Length: 337
Image 1 (cartoon, one colour):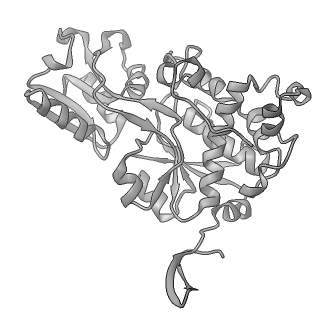
Image 2 (image 1 turned 120 degrees about the vertical axis):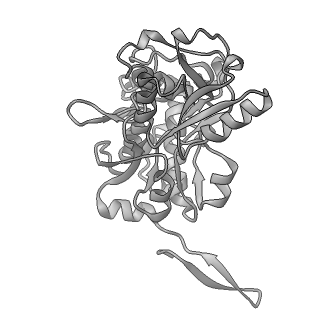
Image 3 (image 1 turned 90 degrees about the vertical axis):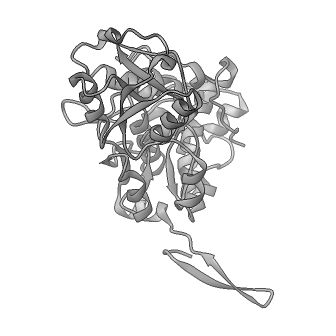
């Protein structure tokens, strides 16, 4: 069944209302491109370069989905969204997938009609200050003015943290992350708070990045990941397994450079992932080489992390919690079998 809304199903003599499948994959295929909601400008995660080409960790997730579907990672329309409008854009069908540094929370997962498909970046909220402020701990920020982006989890996290520690603050609220960093630089606030990954990205936008430093406290859990509308399990699986394919590829040592030579591997896990044994794309409505396409055109998880936010990028973020589980991190993918 396709379309939106509900259908009446007769079961054991009782008329039940059941959700119809939205058939997002069919719509994307017919359209010929993926509509991906991204941050309007967050270096390392989703940001257009000087030629207007979108790049970043979240962007590469969308490119991976397009590669799996079309065998062409370029078939993506990027729709920049601020924090306030991002979830509404997904709910309304303006976008097919939201891949925009968004925290997975219980209320978002259960009350808004959306499903998070996984975590592509484990993060936590922190504080960025000007070194001249002369403090070394967030507990020394009593009375500070704090720049905060509205429509984010950071607002409640800050309120909770300062309440627990019995200290006060004044919030200076902005609509966009760009405005928050401008507020810090202009002296409208003493502190900028956000996810640590975002603080790294915003720090390089300062005229004097070396004058800013992150305080040691991490005050929250911020599991960031893509999300889709509820009611379409097939599409949920496509987005979820795109990320899992990248993580499994890194664990198995499959890269953009060696993916073709790895087709001769006798390792059954490698052969299943690359579509050489059995057809694990069929259940998602994809071709059997769906994961090969992702790795060949986009790369494994370690590659996209390193290029976009890791030591090879301007952000130079350590893998930390985003290392593979075999390396002491939290990135772990179910097997393809």
